[in-house]
Image 1 (spheres, rainbow, N blue to C red):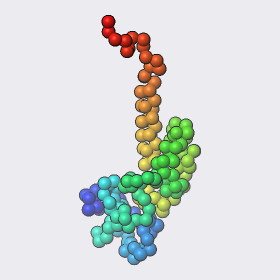
Image 2 (image 1 turned 90 degrees about the vertical axis):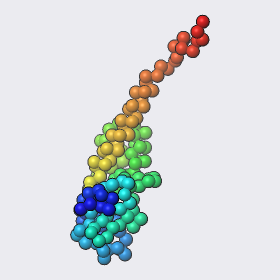
Image 3 (image 1 turned 45 degrees about the horizontal axis):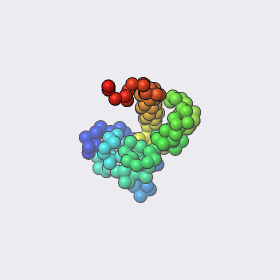
Image 4 (image 1 turned 30 degrees about the vertical axis):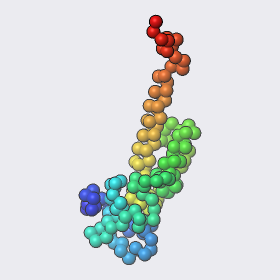
Length: 157
């Protein structure tokens, strides 16, 4: 089923919606709800009759979130900022970030993650992107000589 934005959504279970919607909306939940994965769309859950936007969902949806902190792992409550801090403290791989933050070790994504899916693909992509950006910056810094050559700034004679 497609969202109003035209993006194909995936089915989510009632237990997922029940955890992320206030009780006032529970009577609207049925087995026909889907999750919209479009980061530019405010719709989080939709069915043929009802839509719930980021304003009605009580949990921040990491890739729809504009401000900080942005959650990456809902079970362990690890944010993008926590991952960056772990990398700043020396983590150099996904596994090291997992050890330092506990990210990905919750096992309750069906309930805690608004998408109803495992968070590992998302946080792995985020960690690898940050590590790659940092590696490129380090390579660029390494290519700059520590001391300029003696003739680089000498006026031509």
